[in-house]
Length: 430
Image (tube, rainbow, N blue to C red; front, top):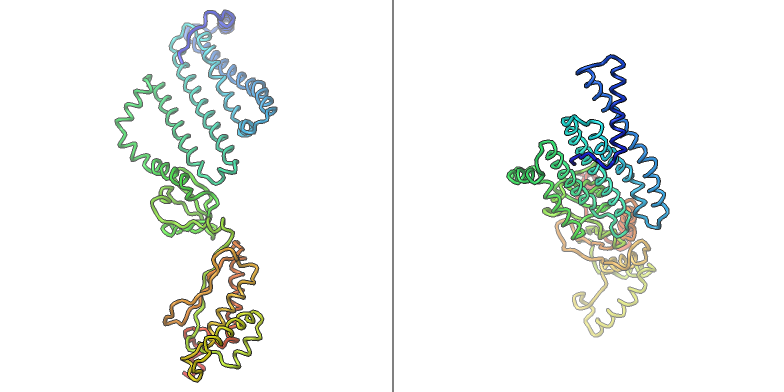
């Protein structure tokens, strides 16, 4: 800003002249003359100007800002309360001293153009910094307000606000440089344009992060609180922070993994949010059975299984189907007729057992299936969803199910397949 003496303001001009005369008379009374008089006069005026600025800042904060805050508190809006909470108006008060310098400097330093020019630059730089701090504080308050909105919860707002702050700092820095070198800001921009290749390299991560943040937000790929797995970076845990260049993931062992934001667009990762939003958590586990133990149910086994309450409806239905199918067939050969197997009965039991378990979701995929046999036996897989998502509770439900499965297998005369261990060899006398 260029200072011009305000001729119409006779009061300020008269006060300035009087104040300058008082300082001259005071120093003369002390016997100070010549260059020493000028030096001491400039020191006293400079100290006085600093004190005036501090007083103006205090008055602005204690009076004007208090009035503004009282007015805001009486409004029904909530967004303006955030401006008070984040002390935005406190930063606005710093603009007042800069404006005061613009009014007093030409008066107090009249006849000393070099001092006025120096103060012009100092005041303009100070005013620019005050504006930068105020704008940054406003956007921080704006971010805080947006994050409190339910529909924006978890969105990577911090990335956008970081970019805005970066732009404000860059523009402010360029303007301050233009003040110091006494050149137009556009001239500085032109010089930076010639260095665009270098700037692209310097801000490569920032640019990629910004692009990544836009795609993450637009496609709702990840947000704060999501459980993600990112094998490339060894990350497996909750997203705790999304910034312009990095995303922080707190792993289950409480370590922190920092991942470049753009990697969530360029690389593959798993987001478990769908699981948490669905209200269930998948249980997908199999148990391998010894195929040598699979057989048709004989009379003794059938009588034993029919005493199991969960299988009564199953046997009633199957017996009717089998009798109808076998009618008129040669029952002396097992290949000619249908018979119940211990494995089929076991699968029916598992389906019924899981269906009455209140901790298993009935609204989602519910499946007990037989997988392809292999050298480790015949896998029977349970593919259901637990209604409990908390890790410890989920694991407890899963363990209870398989504890019961392993314990109930002998009732069906089925054996679990497992590789021979030391005890097995001891029994064989090896």
